[in-house]
Amino acid sequence: MTPDPIVPAELLAIMQCPACGGGLEERREPPTLVCVACGLRYPVEDGIPNMLVDEALPPDDEDPR
Ligand SMILES: [Zn+2]
Image 1 (tube, rainbow, N blue to C red):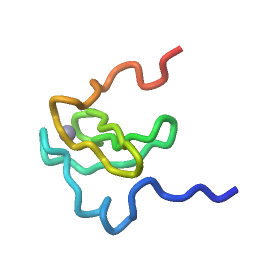
Image 2: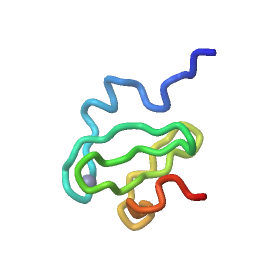
Image 3: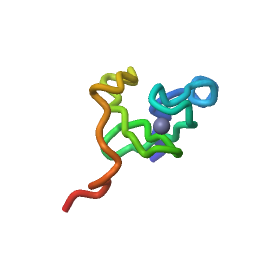
Image 4: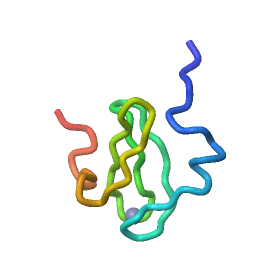
């Protein structure tokens, strides 16, 4: 199995966290873009990253259990 990237690498490379301007990396479960600087998580819905700070998930409980 080769998972498709959630966001094309060239797009991810130019995207920034709207809250702090930090870089983003993708998570697959669930599909989110995570800011490497402040840890906010942006949900990806149908392949479209939702980059609204108001709807971003806080950095804690990354692995809820
Ligand atoms: Zn950030």
